[in-house]
Image (cartoon, rainbow, N blue to C red; front, side, top):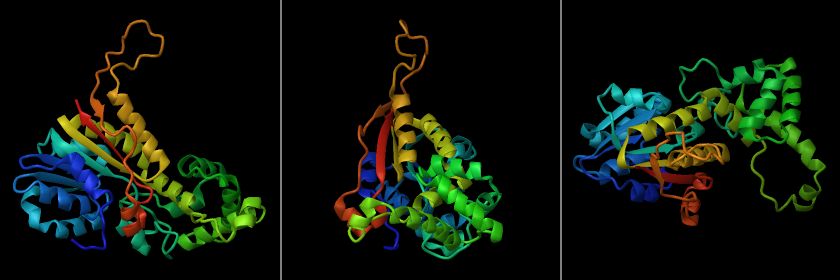
Length: 322
């Protein structure tokens, strides 16, 4: 395993999944294979793993890294939203554990040509699966201002969405916005004007640490391009349906929108009744499917954050199948 790729919350994932021989696990966002390496190692000699990813480049790297376990490994190029049908194709109906490590991968962030990072010059792409039809550049240049404002507000929780879109609309009339740095600079120009008039910023400009102004805009576009939140809802439903009794669902999220969906979905499946309040007799016929293991999300330790700064926003939620 290359030390350049550090799987987030690795020890915690292993503690909850407890990989063992004769069991089947799914890493539904296998990425570079970091978590899968340790799951397969810990489930020696007969534990099996199915690894799924949208990114064919990531799958190629994972295949090389996991070569020592090739006899116990199945790799699938696909969307975890289709988890059930992907496994059905291999005759797998139930599994002992499912891991979802959400968001953008290290490979995608560190490859400028993929267009995910505002820190590197590259085409404004952001497609996790390069076979998708629509890129971030197409959305930025072809969407109406109202559509862009909704995307930035809903998926980026961007407070300056209206001002950013107004500036984008002005810029794109002169030249299309086709690179990551073009978009990042466009957003930065809006923030610089806003922050000049911020009393808090003037007082603390040398001390206040701020996230990059383009962070929320890039997040929103990435979510829109890849349909991430819709896929997450479908993927969670599928993952819960294929778990054996006692099987673990482990989900790592990196921003509030993802975590909210995960929390709400687990709570829904952990309830014994979903009838409206004040309903005198239960008529919903809802059956409890999960037990909540982590009432609050598990966060990375400070030592892990120091070793891997990208872990700082990670949140892990865990549930078991009834």
